[in-house]
Length: 102
Image (cartoon, rainbow, N blue to C red; front, side, top):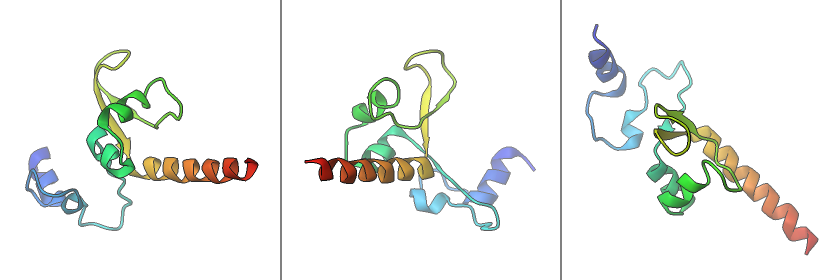
């Protein structure tokens, strides 16, 4: 079976469908989708530029996966959904801890 056909069988086969429609139908294996900078920006309610900036050099640093390209900002950026959720939880924890100091 070709890679394209296998992907279509597992993920429903339509390009451009909503993210939730791309979840695998086989739930016996864990699935942790890769998000684009735009998807992360929507989740965090920030701009895609903020996401890109905090993927490389600023604090707080977002956990990023670089696909292709070279050093610096070259290449595609992708983010594991679970890591973004952990990032949110950590920022919430730090915010709560810092608010007690005031």
